Length: 436
Image (cartoon, rainbow, N blue to C red):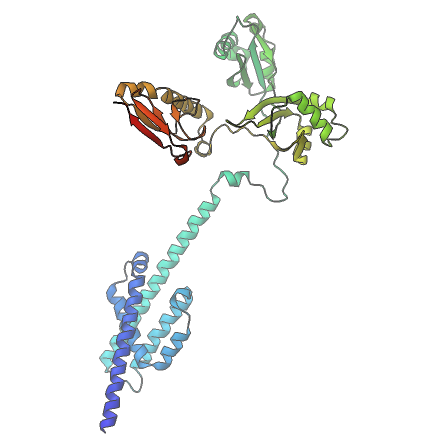
């Protein structure tokens, strides 16, 4: 009898320990997920969750078979939403079965309370599921809106194997107007004023869409139809005002040949291009000279290499791009289509025109020029500058021509030695000594 009593007490003690261990596990699980639970569904209270931990602990102590079955299932972090809902429903059903079983010693009031709180747990879990579904729907909605947003990459992207998109042709006719002599107009603004005073759009019944100033003191006039352009060309008032009509120059494609070891001259460049490369019989030296024109040269500061940007016909450009590389003397040059980038990526993203960048560039020049005057006014002998305008100046101590940090000596009382070993393009170090 005493032995049976001892075994009963030990069984109860083991049950209490298991209850406390399981309850603490439920509390730890609650604490780890409390932030997410309160963020997703603020209406779930701590009281409800802790009560669910108690019911879960009772279920674990009362039924060894159910506990073993739960341990075989997947963890909470790897379970899907449907599996979690099914797991909560089975846990509540198991608690109700234990409370109403044949071995249960609970009275009707306790059984009723257990069933009521079990339904409360299921209601909370269902509310979690509904709010989670709403958040998933909101996330999917934002992802869909982001996918529909127009971006530069999406606009410019062409599918694999898709034909290239044709470039839109100029829809409206344009006319170039220049001064007949330098004495008539020296700037494009003067040519524009003379043109406007000589032409009356209402009397001639024409629609001028745009007037744009160009080089050589000329202007480009864009009309809405060919009839308006013809009337402007045949207007004798322009000749009397000292203006002449010219056809606007159409820019040819540009091709870049870079980087050659030295500048050999464009004539020799064409000779070696025709002699060393299999361009075909249709592209002899005479044809290359006829269809090629040197637009400009590009050099990097501090480097002897030079790149040729050549203006050529569309047929020659296509062949050169297909070849990909040419041999000039001892050089193998990569051939690429040259695209003039007028502004940086940030300006392109925000839609800033080229004129704003030019204004900022002029401001950088002016600010750099005013450094020494400002230092003299403030009595400064040594300055540390950042992102200054790059220019050849011996008083700027920096690691290279492309450096964005420099030390400037503005006074005669300071001796400064530049430490090139400790400096780079982003950091300039110097040893300074003041001559008192």
